[in-house]
Length: 256
Image (cartoon, rainbow, N blue to C red; front, side, top):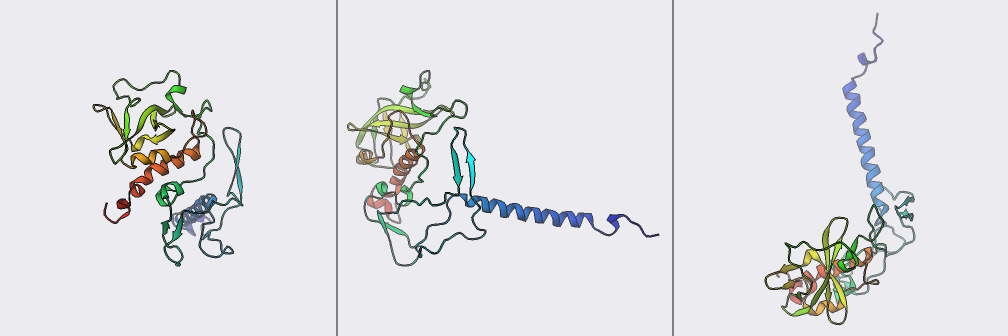
């Protein structure tokens, strides 16, 4: 009498393997499609009627509710990035590199470019308050006694010239680290990313080798003297980091 067991007609291991492959291919397809909620369609030099999306196509809009009660719908249909006015293409070939026509650090060209993030401060998860604040606005917080306190130190650029004086330190109260140093240039105060700073406690100096002393005066500022928004953070970090390439004409050459 023939057996009625399903395993006598199908190789379970073989079927399981193919089922996994199908599932994994579907997962890759789904994740790749979901990744196109930001940054698509791509900007192109080609006519406006051509949309660079690739395969697979963009997903349908989905609305996410943030912890502070705001709604964000992505993809952001209809939103267009501001045009690049401070650079021109090096040739007429599509995709040619851009050549700066003015001050690339200010015009947001190349390494100085930044994302137009929300113009609101980053908030703590538990209390919903700005997470990056100056020490003057953070009662109960202070720098560790065993570390050099940069407040009051002279700030010098890559040219060795004095750009100003460190007037305060901005801390991240969520991760308990210093994010920025506030520099008083004499005319205004600007923030410098801590990752681009070197403090020499013995000499009472703060060094920033990515830019020259004169560049501090043109650094992006803040709308509120006691808080920094996500968009302002991107602009500040892009400005000072791009100095590694744009601070002097020599840095733009093949050999630095």
